[in-house]
Image (tube, rainbow, N blue to C red):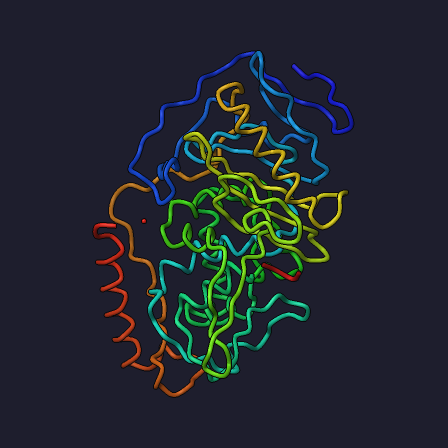
Amino acid sequence: MTIGFTSRGAVSICVLCTASLPAAGPAAAIAGVDPGPRATAAAASLLYRPGTHVRPRPGAPEVPDPSALSWLVADARTGDVLAAHDAHRRLPPASTLKTLFALTVLPALPSGIRHRVSAEELAGVGPGSSLVGVVEDRTYRVSDLWNGVFLSSGNDAVRVLAALSGGWRATAERMQAKARALGARDTRVTSPDGYDAPGQVSSAYDLAVFGRAGLRNDEFARYCARHEALFPARDGGSYGIVNTNRLLTGADGVEPYEGLIGVKNGYTSNAGNTLVAAARRDGHTLVVTVMNPRSGGGHAVYEEARALLDWGFEAAGRVNPVGSLDALRPAPLRGPQPESAPVPAARRDDAPAHPAPWTIAGAALLGAAAVSLYLRLRWGPVPTDQQ
């Protein structure tokens, strides 16, 4: 059944209401985020249809009418999509694509490794890129570089981390494979930092998948929620950096959102403003994506996300899902699988600079030992763009 919807097309409402499946799985990095794939009784194909989709029960609040080209609201624990508009529309993602970069590279690089940056690793940063201030011949911890990625959306930090994990093209290919493994089929990766590049697209659906997956990773969850940090300066000192996600920090007159967890904002002249945001209230965690608001100025992306979050928390339990963030995720393969190709290790501080540091045997051994120690610690007892 379809009813009229003022100014934004049609709202698709199914006459058969279905209850969401019970949650299962171990505790996640952010409480209330189910780490296991699930399905919903709502047809996956519904979200491929144009327009706004919501399946309200009696007493459900009216869904907002954002100006964004595409948006989505989902329950982070179950993966149920509560409402969406053009969820699979392929659009340039800007730096929200850094969520996929982090999902792909974070597990491969222990945060405590220290690395001296070379000029070659900084080559290729696009003009107008947001930068955190990485400089050649300066030593950084991997954790410093991740602060630069999540807080300042530094494309310079992305370049170095990509170099340490196999190179620019190899990182893009691994990101593409990671997207497919998560069931994100709208995403095409050309530039791992989210910089505008021919053919590079994602969707509100895929970005919500990435944001939700990130909340299950302890490191990702900590970085994306961090308001500020110190970053190494050229002279040996340090300077403060602040998260450019204004819905998190309340900067520039944007009121911070109560219960906001993170995740990542973005902007390019081609993509407009983009945002993946997650918040938790009263035992519920929501993930929203807003892509390219068409009115309201540069802060509209935050206000439209705010309205969608408010609606999602009010609508919890009073709407039936219109889809699932797990609907396109491949089923797990059975039987033994071949091991993944090893990721090159970062070189030691005192190693000579080479374009391919992993070719040095000593550095490789050191990296392998660090990875082994990291895995024991990691799984033992435990928890912005071209502006």
